[in-house]
Image 1 (tube, one colour):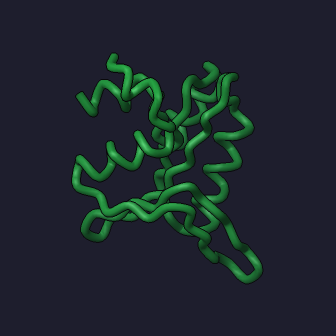
Image 2 (cartoon, rainbow, N blue to C red):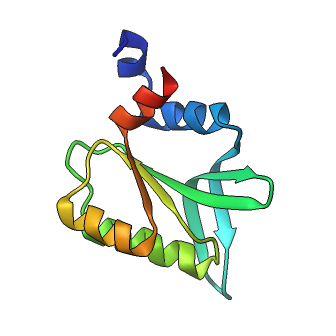
Image 3 (tube, helix red, strand yellow):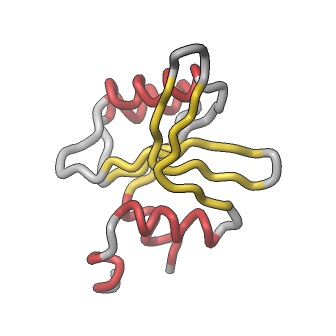
Amino acid sequence: MNEEGEKASLIDLTIEHFSKIGYKVERDVTLEGLPSLTRKCDLLIRRGDERRLVFVKDWRRSVGVNTIINVDRAAEALKIPGPIIVSNEFSEHARAYAKRRGVTLLTKQEVLRKLR
């Protein structure tokens, strides 16, 4: 792992990763769904007709299942399926729920590996 990857913020690495694989990336997006439903996400990525929400959790602790559930519900309410969460690590319960619900989980290490 290079020093630059260690110092770059997780959101910047995530933007670089999705840009590199052909997505147009919008940062700090606020979306409106059902009446009076407003959700903020870190990134909205687009490629062709595909749109996906990306939430970046640069936490020292692992992301738990409640966070995955909240992100999944937000994406469902906005009618944008298949959200992506990028973080340093995820709990086993979070991984199991995400797998069942089609939520993509990426760790910082996976993003760095894909950027090499």
